[in-house]
Length: 289
Image (tube, rainbow, N blue to C red; front, side, top):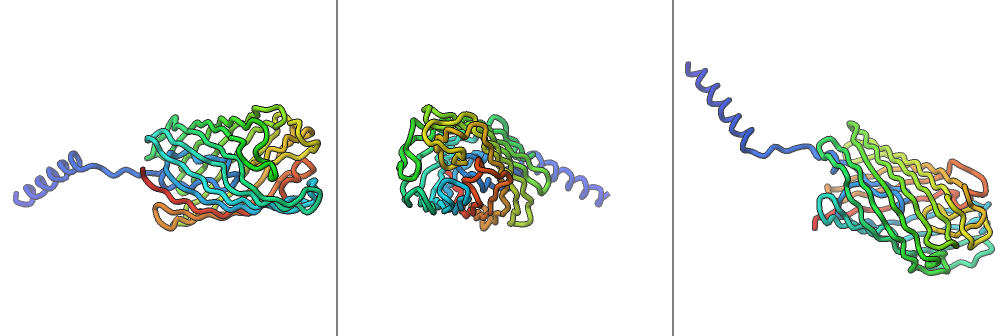
């Protein structure tokens, strides 16, 4: 009888704990990592506050009108969660160092600025599911010497989503960059990332597509500017660039990630000649506001 009484008391106390003590649920969304490539287009669907310094080295293919050369970008992205479902985002800015090999003088200057908001239409942290819609406006405030600050800017409606599949995470984003000036080109973008969690390390692969919906009227060339530039190329209508990025992220702490990756084109020809390869390096600092 004494043993039965002890068992009864144990079950009763366990029941009280189950009722009154908050249960900790898994947060699969917090275990995910952000996109690496096409940082001005491929938006993380999660509603988080963070600062993200970015460095990108972009090698231009020798078949481009500049006969090769390189572009270096130094940028800082910012995101601020205004509620559990709404965030303000600033995803394009920074300084561009443009070094063509021929035809165009070397120059440097500031990039345009893209600002907007994103809203989570659906999110389940325990299952690791999220779908987000957003809208950005690219303001032409940059320097024309580095092919910024021209036209009336772009409107960028987009969708992004992610799902956790065990140790695998899949994230994807798609949207339109719609010109507000006939001299600019308009684009359709699609990106997807698959990564695998190995402790604090996340090896990843990403695929990106940039398709020219409508050619511009500024430059009489066939290749467009991928994600960073809008040349307004008059012969670029229908051109598509498809790329792959291989790399990884490492979670230093719960609030700090570092990432690096190598991007290269899967398509070829003059329409894809803006890129020979690209190298990314960034760091993400998350915080609460």
